Length: 320
Length: 246
Image 1: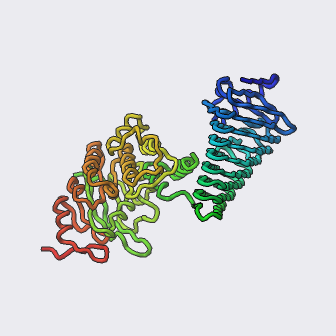
Image 2 (image 1 turned 180 degrees about the horizontal axis):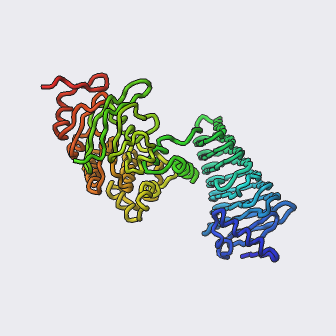
Image 3 (image 1 turned 180 degrees about the vertical axis):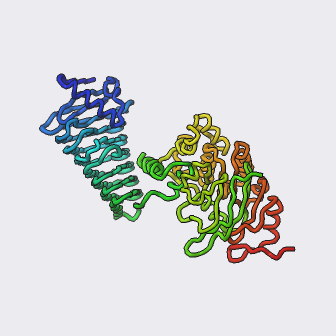
C-alpha cells in the first residue's frame, strides 16, 4: 500500500471535500485507507491512496496533473476507486493527463467526481488514454458538479482500446449546476468479443453549449457496443450529438440511441452515424428530439402535480 | 341520492367533428359505473374530457363535481379535487422507479409508507420485492405497466377514479383481480367510472351506461345494459347504432 499526504493544504482539502460531497460523492471514502482514492485540486494532488493491485503514479504539472494508473494482471479490485478532480477558485485551468491500463483479467470500478462549485472562468481538460486488457473489466462513472455561473469549459477527451474479451462501460453525467461549454470526445477501438457501453447524460440550461462526439469502432469479431445519450436542454441552450458506430468484423453488433428533450428556446441536433463494411456486422440507431412526452406530463398532472413539477420529474428520471 | 359527478349536455368537438353530443350522466358517491359501447362511441373521449386533457376541452355543457362546475379547471386542479385517470395505454416514464411513481399520487394525502406501497402492488398482483425498485419505463410488459398504473390509482385514494379499459392487456385469469381492485377502490371511498368492453367488469358495477355516437343511449342495471348492447346493437362503420325499440 502506498499513501501520500501533502501538508499545507488542509483548507483546500476541506474545500475539496465539501465540493466532492456537493457533487454527490461520499466524502468518507476519500479518507478510508481500505479504498483507493485520488484527490486533485487544480494542479495539486491533495491526497492519493493506492491499494493492493493498483499502481498509482502522479506528477504535478503547470496546469494540472499527469496520472498513470495500472490495475495489475489478474487483480479484481473489490471496492471502487474514487477520484476527485476540481477547482475551488472562480477562475483557473486544470489539465488532467490520464494514462490508464487495466491489465489482463483485472477488474475495477472507477468513480470520478469533478467539481467546480464556484466556476466563473474555468477550463477543465482531461485527455485520457485507456487500455482495457484481455478479459479485463472496467466500469467508469464520471459525475460533474458545476456552480450556477456557467463560466466553465469542460473538455473531456479519451481514447480507449479494448482488447479481446474486455469489457468497458462508462457513464458521464452532468446534470447539476450549469454546463457552461462541454465538448465531450470519446473514441473507442473494440477488439474481438469485447463489450463497450457509453452513456452520457447532460442537462443544459441558460446559454449552455453541449457538444458530444462518441465513436466506437467494432474491429473484432463479435464485438458489441451501445452508445446511449440522454440530453435535456432548456432556455437558450444548444446541443449537438454525434454518435458513430462502425462495424468492421463478423458478428459485430452496435447500437446508437440518442434521446433529447428540449424546452424553451433550446436547439438540439442529433446525428447517429452507422458505418458497416463487413457483411456479417450489424449496427442500428435511433434518435429522437422533442418536447417532454405529453402523456407522461398529463399522467403526473392527473396525480396532482402541477405542470412544471411534472416536467421536472420526467426530465430527472430520464437523466437518472 | 347524492351524486359526485353530474354531466349536463356535455359536448366536445375535435378537428371540426362533434365527438361528444350532449352527454348526460350521473354517478353516485361510491358508485361503480361502467360505460360500455363499441369502438368509436366516444367512451375514451369522455374519460379524457372529464380529466381535462389538452385537446379535450368541452365545447358546451357542464361537468359538476361535488356540486362545483369544474369544466374550466386544469388537469392538476381537477386531480387535487380528487379526480384521476388510469390510461388505457399507460405512459412509460424512463428512469422513474415504481416506488416514486406510486408515491406521487399520495403526495396530496401526506405521503405514503413502505407498507402502503407494498400493499398497493399486492392488490394488483405484483410482487413488491420484485417491482418496487424497477423502472416504470423498463422492459415491462403491457400488462405489468397496466397493473402499476392501477396501483398508482390505489395510492392516490381519489374521490373519483376514471379507469379507461383497465382490463386491456391483462389476461382473462386476472380479470377477477381487476374486479376486486375496483371493488376495493369503492370500499376505500372512491367512486369509479370504468370504460370497458368486458361483461365481467360491467357485471360488477352498480350501474352501467351505454354510449353510442357520442351520447349516452341509456343507463341502468348493468346486466340489462349489457344485454341490450349485445342483442340490440349492430356494428356499422366501426360504430354501433341501436336497433328499433321493442
